[in-house]
View 1 (cartoon, rainbow, N blue to C red):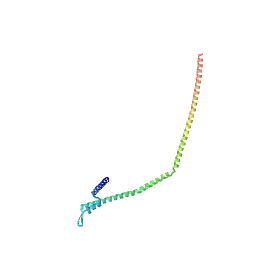
View 2: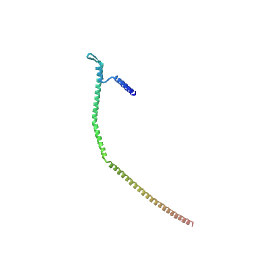
View 3: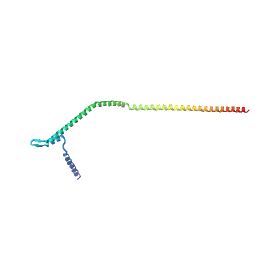
Length: 185
């Protein structure tokens, strides 16, 4: 039952589409020629063709011919433009090939050689940094020792100066005492 309905629906759609396409007029030159010449009325052995139909056919033929001429001219212009671009494109291809050959030379470098070169360069950089660090640390140690020596010398100088000052203060006091005794006598 279901297959019959499906089959009937398909047949109905086909019939409808045939009717729709049959109603569309043929606008091609061959279709117009057929409408003008073959479908025109005839009298004895002569065909009776309406002048308006022939004029319309001639107009359509000329329009189609003009379009084809215009398309041909445009195609020719595009062809000339394309032919003019060929040397430019060939020059660009040569430039790209030259650049590609330079890249191929770089690619031909053994990657392991490049890798070891980078490792050696980084190793040299690390050695340089360590050397500079050690020399800086040694310089700081030398500066600290020099500072400690200066601090020791300054403390010794301060203590000696304080000792001299006390000694001079005692001598001054002794002299004052002596002056006071002499005044008191």
